[in-house]
Amino acid sequence: MALLDFFNRRKKDATSEMSFIDHLEELRWHLIRSVIAILICAIVVFIYSDFIVDTVLFGPTKPDFISSQWLCKLGRSLGLGDAICFTQVKAEFLETTMTGQFIASFTVAFIGGFIIAFPYVFWEFWRFVKPALSAKEKKNTRGVIFWVSMLFFLGVAFGYFILTPFMVNFYFNYKLSAQIKIMPTFSDYLENLIYTTVGIGVLFQMPLLVMVLAKIGMVTGAFLRKYRRHAFVIIIIAAAIITPSTDPFSLTIVTIPLYLLFEASIVVASRVNKKQELKDKEEWS
Image 1 (cartoon, rainbow, N blue to C red):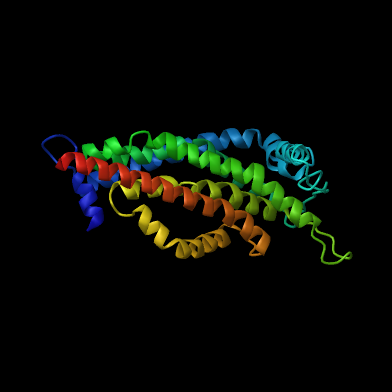
Image 2 (cartoon, rainbow, N blue to C red):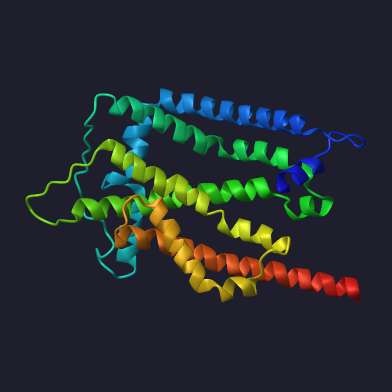
């Protein structure tokens, strides 16, 4: 019923409403254009796959990685010495199947194409949804494409520059026994990298989602504060889903930024609620 109501609100013109089939046809073209955009970007990534794999994907595994140097300099400037400097590791990866590298190249191309094309893909989604919104809802969601894209890229950057170097440094330096030599597959590294970049990018949408829900009256700052403990449990579950391995280190390094985003969401919801209360008072006075 909710889906039908949504479709009924999308008008083809001022006098006639689009049929359900018309809506599906329009949605199909939005999806087709989104897929084409991703494929075009994926082809570009595939053409430069050697550079992207050696320089971008393996960047966080190298001791001269930019964020590794920055953290080390920050620690020394704060008088911590080398406390937060990463220990140099020799990160090498295996591939245990003949088709492993071939399949991985397509995975790299698709994920890279999706990241690059994300603003356009969301813009196509927004073009489909926007006609169903009222004038007030359109006004309240002004600039949504910019904010969604910015939060997504911010999450991807956080995962790439912060989480991934910590993950690599921790696992390659963790020694259960001197007789064990760590030699992960490239597919294993790529899977972890996708989770800690694209996954974090998606979850960084939390404050924006809460803001939208607060504007339409579904959540309030007081409600989020009341169920803060419940939210913490949900965040831990989400962190466990994002990180393929469930060790305490991975969970902690993902849980902390997600919980900070939740606290930011409380602030955003409270401000939205306060503005709405002031507006309601002005209307009643």
